[in-house]
Picture 1 (cartoon, rainbow, N blue to C red):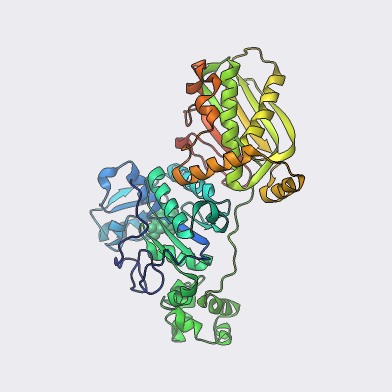
Picture 2: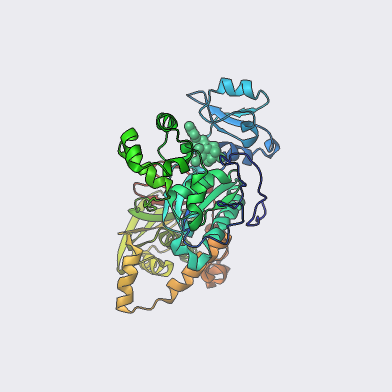
Length: 462
Ligand code: TTP
Ligand code: MG
Ligand code: MG
């Protein structure tokens, strides 16, 4: 899929509760992409997620109504926008959906595949900022305030994300760009499908007040009924009703609705719990006894783990080398660094020493792995380093690689040692080290993303 322009054609009325134009404007119809100052919150949501993933392998279904559903509950889980034109929507009983749209292609869900694509999408988000708050498999809030210097304005970052999701996962997503989570989420919903909307800070109230009350966070059917009885139909109506009146009708949540209706939403983007360890390992296509090949792989894994540390905003102190012999015996060796790091070179140096310490003497290896433990917050650690005045050229160089990766996709820029290293002539090195080979695995241990296998990407998280 090609890179798209920042601007999309406006005017498709689908999914636009306020009846205004879509595709880049949250205010009064003008293009607001360049009015994104202070709009550091992005809400990104995949379009018709399950159905879109199914279309990746079935291009012949593009443009046709497709429903993913069935399973235990016999309901529609996801429907393409073509199916939605017939009134089909998620959570609808499948039988009713079939009656509304008999020509729809119905596909049973393939949850491991969706989890896999979700992992890839979240990885794109985390290459932009560590401040990613997933809301399920197909959506997340991102705080891009810290990424603006390196990657550009929020609207540019939003488009970058849309392009990368399209290029790498072959599905589309929609993005809301705003100054608060609540407004960003509303905006992404209005931008659907395959669009983005920027709500400039000073147009937040205008944007909100035209929407129906149901758009307010926390307003379900029952609350909506109460508001309707008070004669309140739009968010603007709620805004112009005294908070006390709302509190009397709805209790404390009534007052919160009043705040929301004026765009007050102080909730920060809360990233997921930090991992306990980050690691990657590689099973060689054939057992390897050449130390140069092994070390080359250790270097590649170290770079990969370090990039992962940086993208999640953490540094680690203990480097664990794992070696599995041809007979499946597995050993690990740890080294604790003086300073925590997120630099691949540091990890490699420690892992290389551990490897030398093993004195393997051409023992045949089946797998090597590099893991970092003892993680802590990178910002705090770097402040400490600044006090110690320890200049670190590698860190800057690797950060530049990250930025290129965030822009152009992982692997766009490789460390020079992996491209032209002296051991390149060793022959089998390139096959052993090829990214994404069947036996490759990267894992992030800890609470987050538990049980999310990613078989198709050759990466695994525990
Ligand atoms: P949504 O983002 O709500 O829906 P969607 O991605 O299919 O469509 P869009 O965002 O364009 O409106 O949910 C994401 C996925 O979660 C969806 O594809 C299927 C799954 N899902 C369920 O399994 N059960 C449900 O009740 C809903 C609403 C979604
Ligand atoms: Mg979605
Ligand atoms: Mg969603």
